[in-house]
Image (cartoon, rainbow, N blue to C red; front, top):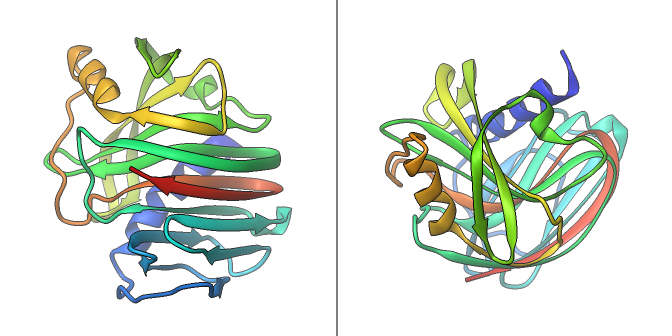
Length: 225
């Protein structure tokens, strides 16, 4: 399986895994296996394909940190909100230092229809657009974002395994590791281009995620709105 397919699957798998974990308060505790819960007043979601090579830790308020080695294979980790929103302005400040294939994105889901989405602010040495279908652009938050779509088939999701659903991407041209993401601008642009979103319910969370595949690095992120 190529790297891109695997890392996108990771995003789906974290959602599927999240549905199976009980929520619990976890503050300043290092995690090496998949978990979801609340920390510092924020929702967190941490998924790792294998319990080796990656360490996730919740910090105060909206802060989290993750370090990983190539042995981690696939992981997705982040903090945000258990229920997504179409009009939230998300501020983030990150020390995002990957060596290889990794993304820093606003990441989440909608239901009815089931959609997985990324607003990617920064990435490592692999451009996720390489295996996506280009749709258009949107200007937001002092940059142009290229908009892409693809379809995931027989993949894990927040509604279970073996699902088929659309996946939408906005990828920032001027990469950055801090700033504010005006989510409404992306959602409106996607809708205008025929990329239909659903509702924010039934586990449709929204986080600022660090995602890595067969790479190494570190990422410390603080999220707020």
